[in-house]
Image (cartoon, rainbow, N blue to C red; front, side):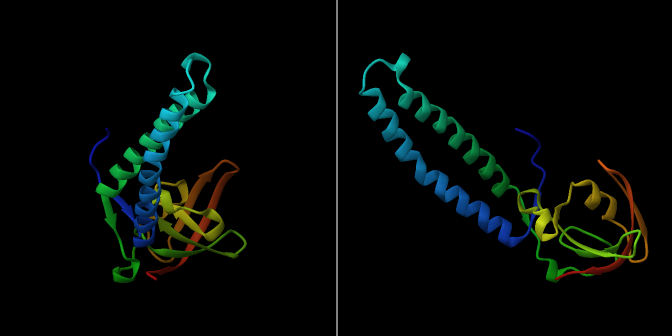
Length: 158
């Protein structure tokens, strides 16, 4: 187990995790039944159903333990209650790229990140470069394709 540091997330991320946990916990008895049923088929060394069920059981238990850990350390952040002129977790930041084209990102928890929706994890390179910065600050981000430069145009808490 790692340290017991808080895991920041939005309320919807927390709700999704607890819903996932419920689904996984509900799967437990079905896996046990599948193992019992497969065991009844005799020779376990050549019993694919048994091995598949045991493997799934291991995966489910690992996922449950990961999610339980995150849920127990969750620090739920409501962006609408935040204020200030610095970029922090939960902020929605509008950046201008080198061509003055606006790009908008919200800084969210790891489990909530979805680049296609403009939601980036707080520990991603872009978010790390933005956190603590203010409007009009220039930010340099090193990405696989090279260095990118942005100007912080707007910081919102929505």
